[in-house]
Structures are given as C-alpha cells and as structure tokens.
Image (cartoon, rainbow, N blue to C red):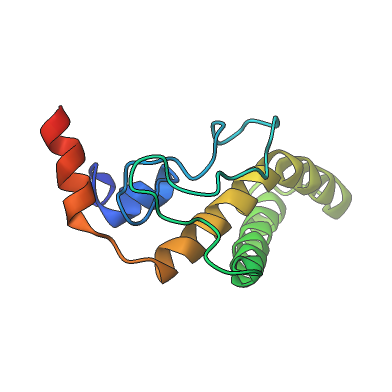
Length: 133
C-alpha cells in the first residue's frame, strides 16, 4: 500500500507519530492500551516539537472525534441492521460494546489528525533519523 508507506503523512497519522519529524510517538503507550490512555508527552522526544502549543489546543480534536465516531456508528448500525438482519436492540448493544473498545483509538486518532493539520512536516528532522539507520 503506497499511501501507508513509512515516512508519508498517512503513515504518520496511522502510527500516531509526531507530524513534524514523523519519528517520535505522540502517545507513550501502544494504541489499544488502557494504561495511560489519554496521556501525551509535553514534547516530541526526537525533534522537541511541543505537543501542547497553546492552552485548549485540542479543542478542535473533539469535533473530529465526533465526526469519526458518528460516521462509524452509522456504518456499523447499517451493516448490522441491513447486512446481518439483526434486531435494533442487539445491534445497539453490539455497537456500544465495539465503541467501548475503540474509544481510546477514536480519542487518539482525533488528536493525531488535529496536530497533523496544524503542524508542518520538517524533512530535516526525518532525514536525520534516516541517516542514523
């Protein structure tokens, strides 16, 4: 898959990497970890990019999360009701269970998208990492 090739913007978003260097992690634990699910370091360990450039920076990420979650729920309900012919109560119960598991991922991907929109990639930090390998 070319769009998920290492070093691309989509790869950095999917792997929740710093948007400036595409090397440092935005979160200290892996994606589906329920230990410290909402913790982020203050800065990128690789390029020193601030992850909290101003108070309330991630307010916009709430809207992204709302959109992602809403479309996801509509798609899942459509698939369960129309594709699998489930009843409404069973489909809602399954949807709540799935959303409970994916809640941390929705939160993290929304923050990742928001910071990626706002922070520009700087190739000098990425190339420096490539030269080390």
